[in-house]
Length: 119
Image (cartoon, rainbow, N blue to C red; front, top):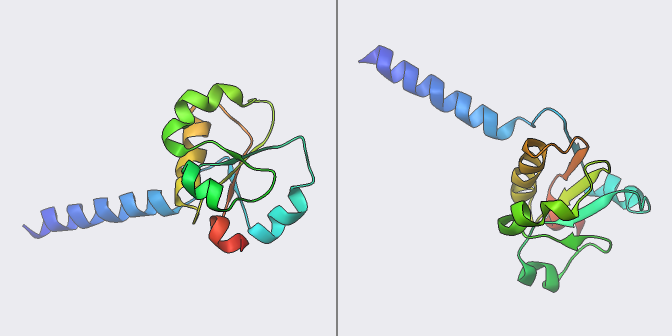
């Protein structure tokens, strides 16, 4: 029984580590760094929060592309340009960044802490 428990614990640790470790090829940026980056109009800035959250407050320059609609709206983004992704706390943008990576986007930046850290 102890071997089985050890294997289960090891698998849980591996799964947790996969969730927390940044995905290779996805850059992480703080909101302080973002303030300097927003001047760069060659990048695509997307906010993956709900339309209501976006309407309540958003970082100027970001376009609302809710996470649940990202697969359908991905075609509106250029794979040749960097995509900067933000959400409320960094969790949904992390998920969106992985979706973009899996869809073939090469230059993706996730904003750590999201809109909460911006304020």
